[in-house]
Length: 153
Image (cartoon, rainbow, N blue to C red; front, top):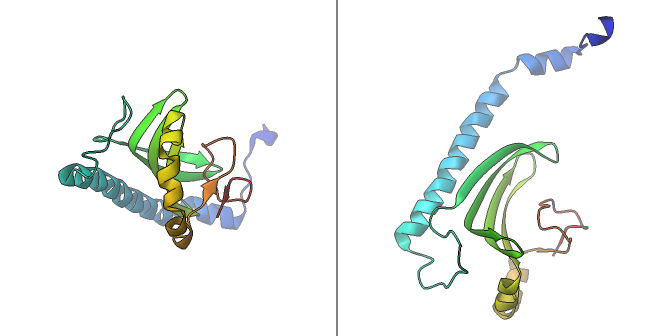
């Protein structure tokens, strides 16, 4: 039974007893979650997606808010709105709050939608450069970190 004991340093014990961080995390998470929900409601109120021809099956009214505790070891919140994750067709705007790192917005486009949007996106390239946008160069669209093997200016 001796091997089953957990031995913590004084610093680790202090952290274990400190509720304040988790109370702050909950308040921040609630605020961000409400802001994501407000963004969905505002988009619907203003009808900002009216007139846009989305692929069949695209959710451009409800969106999806999700959260997790372990993206590369840290918690996160996601808003996918609008969203369409159907097979090789991918069209979504993902806003991500990644604790300890950043808040980002990503436009996911693959399949025939990528071909359709290629010219309009290229036409905005000078503006995207000015806004310091990055483009994913990785094979997988599901990595969100900004290391050189994933996103580049």
